[in-house]
Length: 231
Image (cartoon, rainbow, N blue to C red):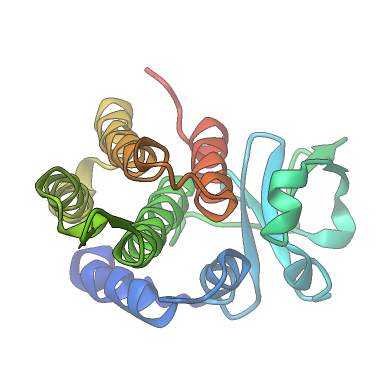
């Protein structure tokens, strides 16, 4: 099995930059597809008994599911869809697995893309997409004679969100040797939470709370609850 993320020490920055660049402006399910299809065969990253996936990936007979260091073929597993209308709008579904075999058809010693990697990539992508959407939306809204985006408070919030996002990426890359340390991982995702709260203030706080942004932010917190272990 090969993956674009073959060496974290050398390729992590290139990988995350490529992911963020090539998925810019795409839909959320296309961002999911990009990550899963980075492997020779599509691999869905799961956590405990749950996984998130776009329908297109599940339709591929070569798709596998990674749970811990066990790699399962779809045909080896039983899973049921958890209905959630927020995710349906994004063409992403949540599934719960039942009666999971103790071992999959393959076992992986060195997991090339952990659930922590997956959660960080998707949550950072969501933050950047919401930021771009908010900027465009607020630039077209006026208060008095000025676009809302021109006001100093709004500029400050945008700067805070941008600095936070790139600080998250920098901390992740420089601290990748301790990524699986629970405390470090919780810290990184708390930073993303702060960024999400800023985005909520930019939208709801200025009367522009939209379904597009709220759905993505909701899904970001779902991903955190599923994939990130609390202290």
